[in-house]
Length: 149
Length: 166
Image: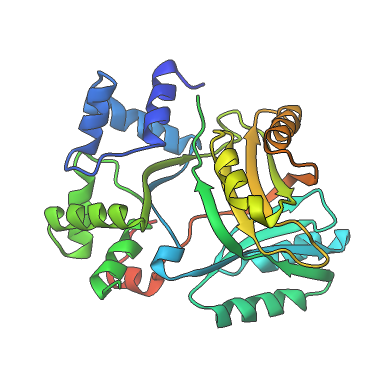
């Protein structure tokens, strides 16, 4: 169970870890707690699966990567096999089964367009795949995965 | 442009972030630069938008947000910017993009919605639809997460640093 302190800590740590030498000491100061308590609770929250990833989040486009969202129409009995084949690509960061005619949705990041084309062509030709739409973004309005606890 | 040191630094930062009192010092040592230089580069990345955030992303199911739906919307071209701004203002909308549409898939606007229940997601989508004056949309609920990871940028540079343990 999350304590009230954990929730406060998570609410802060989701939005900002200070870019300074002793960032956890600064967070502790905001929470009127000890640096060691902040570190101990963060370790616990990470070990217990509340924190998915902790650290630096970069903007893929600013780093020169090419991205797209792909929607795949897969025959139901072959979804698991196709999902696993899709997962094998390191540039696939999200892969979800969804309730839709297009039942598998994944995001793909590649160093260039040619690599994206190659990966999508390979996935299109997998057994059970009846259609694949590539839906690259035109404009990004928001990316901010924060939850109020 | 990113130089080789930038790429190495970014690759090292994709690994586990140290939970020790001076984490940036540990990372700087891995990259082979001073803590001051690492902090200065990170501040510059933040300024330029390359660094979106320093902090944590939670597992939404574990913290009580069990329902997630991809909202796909049909928005008139001329209204995209206004709708993007409007929907971005809602905290439950975590991602908001316009994307190309295709003859067999007319949707050109995408939102990720997170809520505690499906009913809450549906109510939220209806609120968004009314606020934006939109009628044509679908909510695609996820039924299974097959993969959710963070990208390993410039992996060839991470190897040079002798492994980041992540």
